[in-house]
Figure 1 (tube, rainbow, N blue to C red):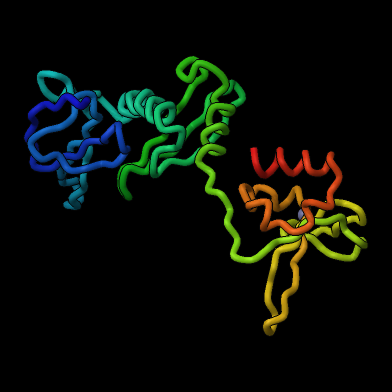
Figure 2: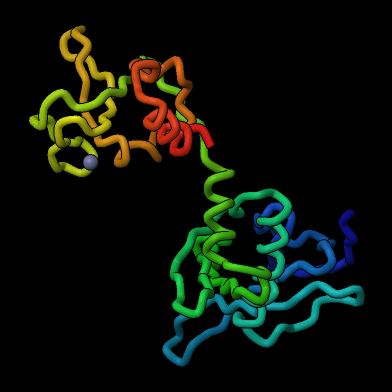
Length: 228
Ligand SMILES: [Zn+2]
């Protein structure tokens, strides 16, 4: 349920905490939103620049936050709510920096001109921030769905090079064959299983030829890496 307040401005935007989009203010804004009000200022040099002031929508109107830092702090709480509710990163965000004390800075590009650095601290998240963000990334992963069948097997020799990391694939280690066509002839590009597993995460088992011939232990390894 969104509570709206009436608010008029010639040139302002608000960050919608439900979508993390930044629409233009047109007569009303959801309560609690961070509001960016724009204005022009002429410098001594005669150049005109756009200045932004940051506020937050309260019941009675928009309160000035007194700077971008406070706006980022307000956004940190909203971002965390978004993440917990939807199980994913909001659009326009990426991890920028992980600190030794357990905090993580998430970059958020609301627009080309409005970029925030949002610090998620363990106290706010209620636990390990990195683990929390990892769990979102896994939940948001798209299942890989290849058009052709891929292959999994133990390397028959140590001659093939991994096309992901470039080093050779030792004999008897798990390797994955990526189907590739050369003049209508099916061929395979080889990868270490551990190098390609994230890329092919969620691949349907029937599209991975050779799975049935693996040992129980190897099957377990695959299941952990690809289907969990
Ligand atoms: Zn490799």
